[in-house]
Image (cartoon, rainbow, N blue to C red):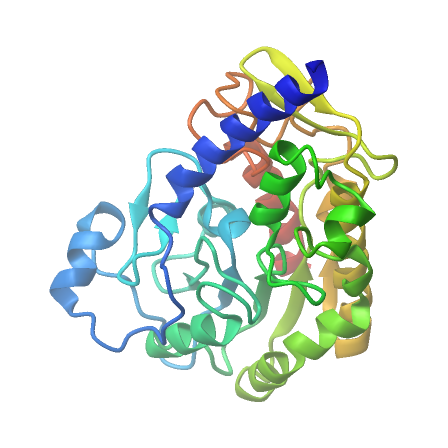
Length: 324
């Protein structure tokens, strides 16, 4: 009974925060830049200023990604695609730390984006970057942070749906039975080969049109343990722990390993954020990812997503790569 109550509390808290993000996430994948006007851009962009274009020859730095890139921390804004942008996301902080002007760093990340499953696809983000003149011979660095929102295995289930099943469905649970029933992603389908195969067409395209750029696959921050079967999120000042979530823990581990391995297959670089942020999960003494209404991180921000501090750490790591 206690385990069921705990699961319900965690699930309700995460679902409430997911709704906040989901309300501002594009419902369908569309090519960007097809119908937006300058007036629309001015109304929906940060500070009411129309989205910048890169100088002739491309932006110095181009960023692609999902909500872990675009940010989930208040106050929010949306771009002309309807994509959620959180305050002080790592792309914004990277631009500031590098001292780059408008148009020198183009961030086309979008909450809910995937490689090629739901939301805006990687290829859609690339089209939008092209519409803003971002990709060209002047581009020195391209960062890509994707994979969390994709469906892996035979079921049409993404991570959010897997988490909801794990934390609220006491019958399916969070292990092999839930995977077999098609209610959770299959961790064994998340391999370097599968990840690379999904990414390759767009990576090859970027290599061709940005021949001088170093392309870097960016992993995700630590917010679950690397081993065992325990997941934890902090609700206010209380750590809420679920001890029997092996499939969820395994998925996170496999995705990190797949991104690393795929970088080698694709001939691009890789940043291991999980190792760099080890010991700073939601239930740690010094969290760099959000809990639910946890004042030690961000009160209003997506749970298991980077806090402003976490994004600052990521920006610093990537700044050093650009300046290397």
